[in-house]
Image 1 (tube, helix red, strand yellow):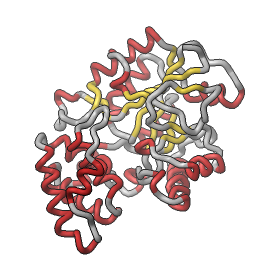
Image 2 (tube, rainbow, N blue to C red):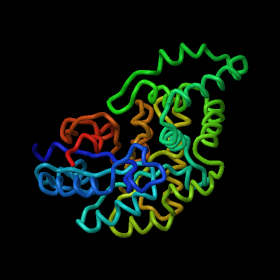
Image 3 (spheres, rainbow, N blue to C red):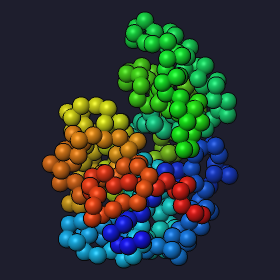
Image 4 (cartoon, rainbow, N blue to C red):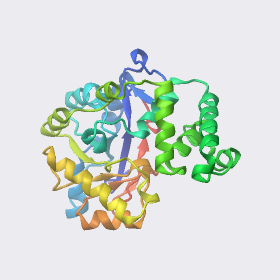
Length: 312
């Protein structure tokens, strides 16, 4: 692979899974993370996002086999487990922060869904609850029959079963926001905890931790405000999501001269890209699975590999 091709790796939960309260969460064990770092050091050149931006802006060459590491969602895992290893190996990672959870001290719906799934082995129990809640709200929200939603949404993915994908999609994007938030809150209280504030404090980075990571060379980027499917809403909502995210970053002292974007769920459309251009975003990351081509590709739709695609 030459220097015009860039491997971008995407991480989410990285933790001591065996001793975690939620060992079933879909994450990478910290021991395997360090093994993966050793593999990457041996076979790639790990570069910073600033080097990639210099390549895109000024054609400054990258070393052969370049790779960058990206970490989504602003988890405390990233400070507790990831950050010390990056410092140990002199690596500059990229951390993408959804602002709402920090501004409003709320657990994001996307994370509530993750922990609901991690708390119940029998996913059909969760689906049964969802169907019952849909039944109760069918007339109020003019809902289709339950079988319609399951047939439409339950499509197996690379890493998830049909049942898991159905639960994710029905709660992430299919229903209107008010209804899906109500259902998520009910399920979160039933399967995870009644104390959302305590859970929030346990899950996410603090502002001081974010500032510390930036001070020691880590890149802090935008992951929107409310972690929504940007490609499913109109341009005004997208603009508000991005503006509020940038406002939060500036409020806590995050540099935005070379700011970058990571699309929640990999979702975007042409309106998203235009908004990023207008706001002088340097590049944006998707969840498309392939190697990024820096000479032929669009800097606003750079693909990424999941950590599970990379040897440990």
